Length: 397
Image (cartoon, rainbow, N blue to C red):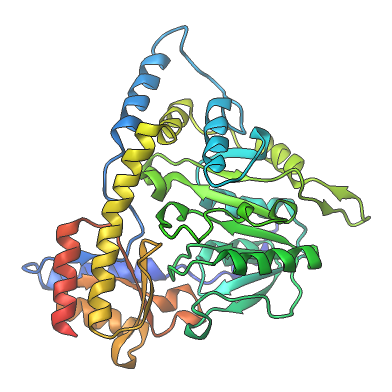
C-alpha cells in the first residue's frame, strides 16, 4: 500500500466558504422573499474589456486556419505577452528581462507551486491574518511556520521582528485586510531579506488598485529587491480574468539560493526547469487576450473597470466612517477589513448581518487568529447592490 504524505492530514478542513454557503442557503430557503446581497466573494462581476474580447475572437479565428493554428506553446509564455508584461513594469520604473517573466494560469497556482524550489527544512514567515494558500502549501511540505502578527496596532502591516526566516510571504495590497505597504516599509523587508539571506515571496495581485503615487506597485521599485524577491501578479482582478486564468511571476536572475553543499543556484533556472516539467503553458488564445490588457486601449478599459470597483469601495468606506467603525483598505484596495461592531465575534457578526440585513460578508476568523473580531467586505459587486447593502448596514448599525 502506497504511503500518503502525512502532512496533508495536518491541514484543517477548508470550512470557511463552505460554512458561509450553507448558512446563506439555509437563510434563503427560510426567507425566499428577501433579496440576499453577497459582498464576501473575491470574484469580479464586470465582463472582460472589449479589447480583450476582440483579441480572443481574433485568436479563435487564427486557430481555425492552417497558418494560424497553434499547438503546444512555450511553457514560460509566448514572447509577445512576456514582452508586454516587461513593458508594463517599465511604467513603474522597473527594468526586467523577458526571461525573468513567466506566464502562468494565475498567481494562486504559482504561489503554491513555488515551494517546489525550496527545501522543506526552510523556516517560513507568514502574516496573520492571511490568504490561506500561503499556510496550506507549506503545511503540505512540512515546513516550520512562524506567524507575523498583523493587528490594528501596526495597521495590519507587520514588520521584521528580529526572528530569522528563510522564506517570507508578503501581500500588498493585502488580502484580506486591504492594507498597503509603503516604499520605506518594503525597503525594511528587503534589508531584512538581504541580511538574513531570505527570499521574499511578494504577492502583488491587487497592485492595479493603488492610486496613491507614493505607494509602490512592485517590490522591484525598492533597491535591492531583485536580489531577494520573487513577485507574483494576476490578471484576475486587474482585468477580470478570474474565469480565463492568466497571471505572471517574476523570478530575477540576480536572485540566488544555495544547495545543502553551499553551492549558489539561480531560482530562475530552477523555475524554468520546474515549469517545463510540470506545466504545459497557458493557452494561446488566453495569452492573446492577456496581451490586449497591456495595449493603450486595453489598459484604459481595464482601468475603467477598476475605477468602477473603487467607487463601490469608497461607498463602503464612507458609510463605515460615518458610523465610526474602524477599518483598513477601501482606498488602494478592493477589500474593506472592518472591525465587528459591539465587540461581536466574526461569525456572530456574520449571522447578525445575514439575519437582520440579508447581507453576506466573510468572517475574519477564517483568515487566521488575528482575524477574529473582524469582517471582510469586497467591492467586486455592482453599484446598485453595493448601495443597497450599505444602506441596510447603515440603518442596522
